[in-house]
Each structure stands twice: as C-alpha cells, then as structure tokens.
Length: 452
Image 1 (cartoon, rainbow, N blue to C red):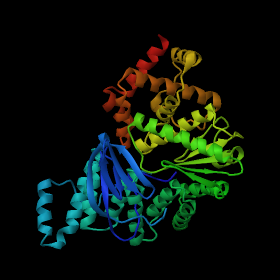
Image 2: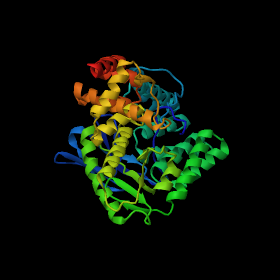
Image 3: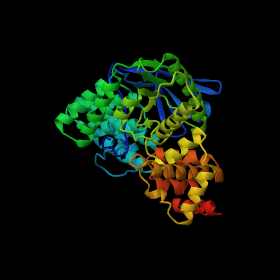
Image 4: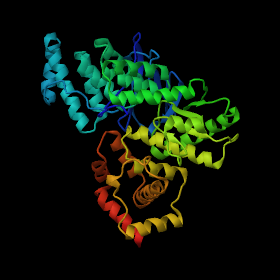
C-alpha cells in the first residue's frame, strides 16, 4: 500500500471551462459539468453520463465555478503547513484588502489561508478546509498550496480535481514522487493499469520505495491476468471479465443485480458515490494468483471488487451474497475514505448480505465470552492472515457486535460514526463521540449480553 497520511485529491489539465460544484451535507463535494434540481433529486452530468442523488443530502449547488477538465490520465495524508500560525478573520480580511493594492502580500495571505485550512482539518471541517486551500492556491501557486488542494480532493474521492492538481505538482517538479504515487493510485482504481504502471515505475526509478515496488509487483500480476479481458459498463459499474470463462449472460445478470443492490446500499449508508465501481471476474486459478487471497476467500475488495467465477453460467444465491458483501465494502470504503477497522467493515458487509450469527455461532461466542477469550476489538487487525477457524470466530464476533450496535441504538448513529471516520477521525474518539460511551464499555455490554 502507498504511504499516505490523511488527505488526497484528483484533477487534470486542459482548457478552462465552467463547471458546477455540489456541496453535500456530509462535507463531501461533487465537481461536475452541470447540476440542477429535479423534483426530489439533484441531477448532475459528468463524463460518464447523468447521475441523480436525493436533494435531502445536498447542502448547496454553486454554479459556474471555473475548473480544468480531464485529460484522460489516470493514501490519505496530512496537508502541508506551509508556514504561519492560525490567524484571526479580521487579520485575513485586512490583508485581503491590502492585497488589492499591494501584490507583495499575496504569499503572506496564502500562508494565512493555509493555516486556517489546517485548523479546519483538525476540526474535521473538510468543506471549510477545501475552501481555504482553494483561496491559498489562488494567491500563490507553489508546491504546498497545490499539494494541499490535491490531497483534500483525493480524500473527498473527487478524482477529477485530485488528478489535476497532482499534475500541476509535476509541472513544478517532474520528479515529485508523491505526485507520481498518487497519480498511479488514481489510475489504478480507475482501471487505467498502463498509466498506473508508468507513474509507479517512474517514481520507483527516482526513489525505490518498497511500498511502490510492492504495488508494481501486484500490478504486474493484475495486468497479466486481465489485459485481454472484455468490459461491460452500466450506470454505476465497470465489469471486466474473461470472455472465455464468464458467459455474457452471467455478466449481464451480475450487472443487473449489482445495480439493484447499489440502490439499497445507497439508502442504507446514506451515500451516493459519483464514480463507477470496478468489478473484475477471474477464473479460479487466476483469482488466487492475482489476489493472494486465502483459500477460504469468496472475494476480495482492495479498492476493486475481485471475484472468482467457478464455472457457473447463471447467477445463484451464493454469488448474490458475495456480490452484496463486497459491494457493501465498497460503500463503507467510500463513506469512510478507507478509514474503517476491518472488524466493522466485515460486520457491516455481513449484515448487508443478510447473514446471521445463528444458534451455533451464539454458542461459540457465549463460551468464549465466559472464558474471557474474546479479543478486544481495539486490538484486532486484518483477517486475511488468519487460518479459517480463527477467521470464522473473528467474522462471528464482527457480525454479532455490529448487529448489537444496530439493534441497541438508533441506526442513524452508525452512519454518523462512518461519516466521522470519513473525516479522518480516530476510531476510538469517533465511537465515543457518536455513541456517548467508550468502545470498551459498549464491548463489555455486548459480552454481558452474550452470557445472559
């Protein structure tokens, strides 16, 4: 995985055009060609077509903002300080007025807006931070102001704008490895594998970072497996598949099913991703080789949904469950900007799939709770390095505790928790702020319920 701290972004180069910006109540922004209200929806156009989202989640639409369009090029980290300390609004206003007649104060003004933006980042006000970073950039276009903009757009998953400003960084320094690494990540997650390879190879040639070298190793296997795959596109998905192993009818059924589940999960998580999700269907052997997944894995989500196709010609209940599970991961990743612990990811994915702990699972957890052998959620890491029996217990724990939180407390609190994680909050702090209790107390209450 790339070294990333807390904020990233995306944008590209070309002639200036006028575009609209949709500000969501969650703090996210959507840059688009045009946006308008249509009944209970806000609709907007992007390069892939027209998308509709509920008006209830929109804070405002800003019309006619200048931006630069895509040039078909194909994590989060801390924005750079750029000097200066937090300043009052009165001082900023005074300096803005002075800048109208004295251009020499513009660098100082850029530092002021940068400092204010950093303070807003610490307060998890992404919208405010973005606005101040934009102002800082307008007064001085240097590496710091460009980097801050690129990173916050990346964090907000606005690939168009993030790519633009990372490319602007390369105009300042063609050997900027951080810009190259992020551009590679953007290209990879948009299935532009050749571009991703070019960016990461150039970065590695400048500075042989082991994280980037590992990315290139994985990418080589991915390209070897899927370079000749066919594509199927829909409103919210790009599906890549081996035409010799996955029948077109199966691909159509998968696409239709995913579109239905997409609507359900959008409502459940109160989030509406603006970019299509990537789904790759592999023959079994290629799936194991590309993903390095454990033998018990039914699918992998590393930013793309990767699934093995085991000789079936029509979608079945098992495949539906896997598709729902992996798509739920994609929604949680999107909503939290990849800042969600594995156990909660797996608990929510199983819940979305309709899995239940069952009487046998409840008995297993009860015995472990009585023997005080259940590990603390705060200390749980990933599941992929465990054997199947350990993984089974971890999945049971995750589902049971997630169900407990969803049943015991108002369901909207879970979305509030995910929103806080999306602002780069630490999990323990976000949990306590949301549920008004420490994670350890909620965990103890859940364990007590298990043994009753």
